Image 1: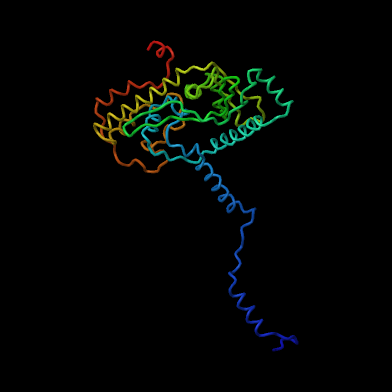
Image 2 (image 1 turned 180 degrees about the vertical axis):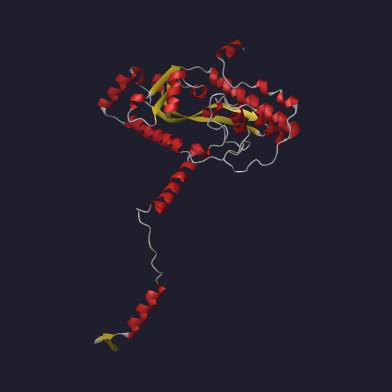
Length: 327
């Protein structure tokens, strides 16, 4: 034992304590929650990873929401499987979150046995809802089939809300002010009309009743539902059938070009197809435009011969009910 300042010190304990202090890593200054430059980038990464890994973002094959586009360029690029570098889409994430919450609400109504709630639902939706499952959310359907050079695949989709008793499909649209104004001024767009028509085909393929289709445009920036725009019309299979036939024709034309002159010529031909005369969010985001500056398509494309250019007028960017009825 030794004495320091009148106190007794155990040399063994002193050595042990010294070694423990040496073994401990130096304390690092932890970022505080008030340090936005440190905390926000980490939170943002979590959110963006969630967006990127959402099933809607991971979808590779074309779906009902895309088949109705009036951009032949985007339609062909998607069907050809072009790589599509996407930035995390916050607006789409908000829409997906709204869909998820509405799904929970209607699923809960399926499970309720409260007599007052059931009576209210019967008053709201009529006696036709009796004897059926009240609501089916995120209902998976097969709307058609596409066949190409490398095999075929079913075109499938997920319906936001299907009410069997009313034979009605409802598709939620979480939209901003520009889309809302366009709906009021010009009606429901071709892309949206084709989408619900395809869903109706999927319901019919499932041997279930379908009479009505509906798009309900929810105000993304509104403080209440007063600005919601509900639109409903009788189910018409023709827009969906037209979209499937157009997609199959486009696949066939691309296969003919690829078999004759290779995939590079096919891609050069796709680059000649017109973009949307109205608006398609995907226009300008494909490799042949490279507006994101990623340098994906630095290699020059081959010159497309006239015989392939003459195929382009065979494709229709817009659906014409009169023309379909005359066929």
